[in-house]
Length: 66
Image 1 (tube, rainbow, N blue to C red):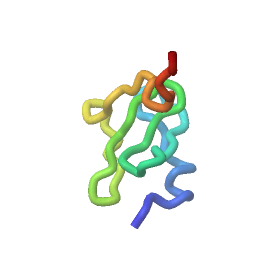
Image 2: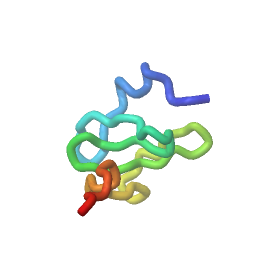
Image 3: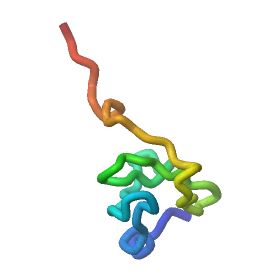
């Protein structure tokens, strides 16, 4: 079972209170402001700051060709 859209609309980042979005691979919820990624375990988002990782934004970019 995936995270429902209704649940995504009410969830917020516990650190900065911004909106979170489901990562494309479904492995976590990413904050649009502070870039913390909260893991999803057994279809339950773990919204604890201590469990979050921080993405720097380079994961979405393709490597440059020279």
